[in-house]
Length: 393
Image (cartoon, rainbow, N blue to C red; front, side):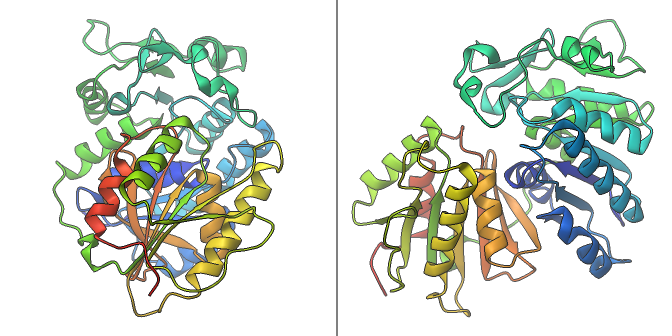
């Protein structure tokens, strides 16, 4: 294959990386541009040598619908120069953000009917009768309803879209009814169903596809085959910083397990009155350190980014380092503070956990994860794999 095979438009950074990782895990040259503002210059650098997969973070999760749609339209306009063969709108699997406005914007920009399939069975998120279920519970019954910045869609998906001027037909894999040629929402409870849905697209007309990591993996498999592409070991990492900004219960549990495994690991509160000193640490954790009502989400992200930048200034440039960042807002703030324009994605280290490196520098490695999933031992496994101690240099 040559040229850009897939263009991905995501509303936050962790989502862009999450959607791109399955392609990298299959050997594709997959890169994520961290902001719309960085896209023009980055595409100019890549002219004539397009990555096989290009993803862009529009930073539109928390915007009003009209603003979010405009950013998606602009991203699609700019990406057209890479002539991607397929378009994928990455949406949150719990339907937070401006899902309807952004899907409509991509559909209009590329002139193709919409296929929406937001299920991620590997993470316990399925779609049944056009409704999202999370680990056996209707989305409306979960803690995601407590997201003050971006509450998820409550109504059945087709009803919500129809109320906003875009009717969707329902489709369920395995039934006699063929895949609709018009805009549709697809149920899926298993990964094989998502693969089957994408397989139908290969035999029919093109679509503007929209979904989460589950559909991204199905597209990646259809384009690049099974996983198994080699990637660099983490044993060469000399420094690791865990930036745990997500306030989800799962992220808190993962951090607790890590602290029990590595009790000497320094835990630094970014919002503390006095910033942590700049003496070097081979491994540490940075957390907000304040109640969520004390500061806005953007203030917390900025504080964490400043603290991470302060710590990483002590790291030797020739040594390989790793940043582990949970929460799209935190990841965006940290990487912007560090001057990142794009990330070359190496692989999907674990389900929903992307591993890559910054601005083409293989020494600056980064992992990202949305907060609300992953097994409790995830950070423990990572820490043990890197085999780092918690002390100072």
